[in-house]
Amino acid sequence: TNRIRLLKIGRKRPFQEMECQLVEIGLSESDEHEAVSYVWGDPARVQFILVDDRRLPITKSAYDILRRRWSTGRERLIWIDQVCINQDDDDEKAAQVQLMRRIYKGAKRVTAFLGHAQDAHLVESLFAEFHFRKKGLRYSFEDLKKLYQSEPKTEQWNAMAKFFGNPWFQRVWIVQEAASAKVLIYSTATLF
Image (tube, rainbow, N blue to C red):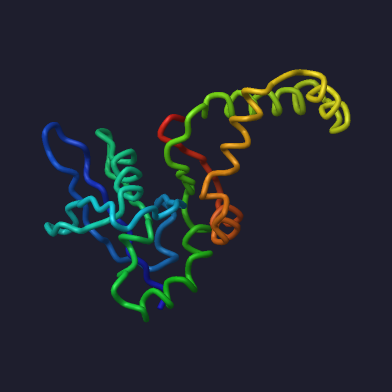
């Protein structure tokens, strides 16, 4: 099958619980959805969301992502495996795994949610500095290497090591999820 489910998250309203619906579409029918790449986390840490008027248990990491994507301005269409694939149906899971590359490739953007990251601002500033020095000033790789070896940036480098030590980077699936994305956005609870 070439059909997938997307989670339609309703507009945020004051004092109301997040309400969602599952919408089934043909894989080629939507380029307006966002796909999420993340680590499931501890399956014992369960939260609930309201999907089609039923309470659905999901991991805390999935819940945190959906809460962050919930917007007052508009509805959102999101593909997140934990909700959009029936986790109790092994046949469906096997069929959907075959479609994942196309799901991520067809998304208008993929958000890689890295969870909570202290010092994320230091990583962001180091990336911005790399970009500025490489693009803006036309440094060669060797020039950049010499420059960074001569400048003490211990706090930033430690933050960078923690960033790349995140469990998200240890998942095999990230190659497919990140490489297939038209637009890839990294997000943490402290960035953006």
